[in-house]
Amino acid sequence: MKNFKFYNPTKIFFGSDKLNVLGSEILKYGKKVLLVTGQGSVKRIGLYKKVVKILEKNDIKIYNLEGVEPNPRIDLVRKGTKIAKEKKIDIVLAVGGGSTIDTAKTVAAAVKYDGDPWEMFDKNNDPVAALPIATVLTLAATGSEMNNGAVISNKIENRKLSIHSDVLFPKFSVLDPTITFSVPQKHTIYGIIDITAHVLEQYFTHVKEVPLQDRWAEGIILTLMEESKKVLKNPKDYDSRANILLCSTMALNGLLAMGVEDERTTHPCHKLEHELSAYYDIPHGAGLSILLPNWLDYVMKNDISKFVQFGNRIFGLDVNKLGEKYTATEGIKLLRKWFKEIGAPLSLSYFNIGKEKFEEMADNIAPVGGYMELNKADIVNIFNMAL
Ligand code: NZQ
Ligand code: ZN
Image 1 (cartoon, rainbow, N blue to C red):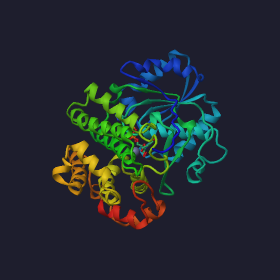
Image 2: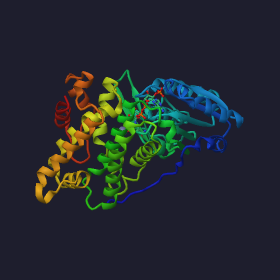
Image 3: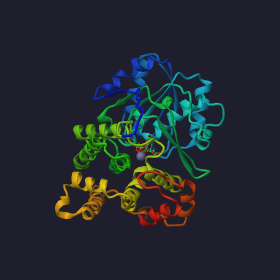
Image 4: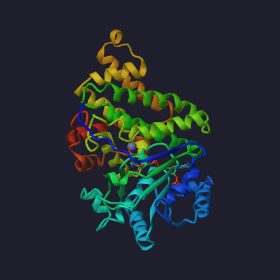
């Protein structure tokens, strides 16, 4: 096991009545809130009204930043930063999914950053200070509600990049499974795939002898496989939504990374996916669904042993009867089969994406580390496998 630092200060309020803590928790940081929301779902489901009512009851003044798009843009961050500076905001509250949270985090950091906020991303200037951040999560997927990262897109430059810093951990997050009842089926599926990718990109590591981390990861995958079927049948199944929500938060809050890899070298498949969303504006989870099985097939040649364990422990394949090679490859086949069963896309043709930009996208990110070091040609090969 590698040496590691574990730090996670985010307070989690989990359950169906936890929105009520919002007033008292926000007041610990001040009375002026920048309320960041997406493209209208929070209003449609009545959540916005509830949040406003609680804040107003506590004499908290609200300034709005609305309209965060999936694959959130730096332009809206700039707008939010201007409001936050002018109004002397005390705390930035995101009510939404990963895109809304990442916008809120970036605004909170940009207020304290001397320069254009995009520099934090393209010059690797991770923030050193930020306003306090809080979240009410509406979609189980990214883990942003309990981690120190934010991912933002720049459409002019076709780039989608991340920042990481301890100052980006939310002070607290409200995780109410009933709020996720209304997540449309396709976003529920994409969320499940995103969680799966977070887990597997940390599971497939060259660090050996990490049995506890392996079993945490396998526990999350097995839970997702069971709960995904239930939630797709009944989107208002409280326990399934709760279990998936907990999986999402635990998948990317530092737990699985302990002793395994550094944040910047893990998530190689994510680096490939961020190129797809940057160029083609497709949902993050959909891009991962297409790339993840191909990335796994490709890197398997580097070391088959973890793949044998995966096939055995996740799908019950008997390596003594089936042999190592079969167990390893069949495990990834069965992963693909599960993706297909829940209705996740498996090929770039689903979005009419061809090979035109593969070289350019690979150039942007090569080399990519992780289970196997990928050079430009490897990355192009993986994109080609996904056609
Ligand atoms: O915009 P609104 O109207 O709110 O609708 C959203 C959006 O259309 C909708 N939605 C969310 N909650 C809902 C709901 N609709 C009905 N009821 C609800 N309760 O779902 C759609 C997708 O929302 P979005 O926030 O884009 O999805 P997600 O949470 O998957 O976030 C994706 C973004 O997070 C980044 C991704 O790259 C992508 O940009 N990531 C952030 C990470 C992090 N900060 O740690 C790590 C991840 O790997 C990921 O890269
Ligand atoms: Zn992700």
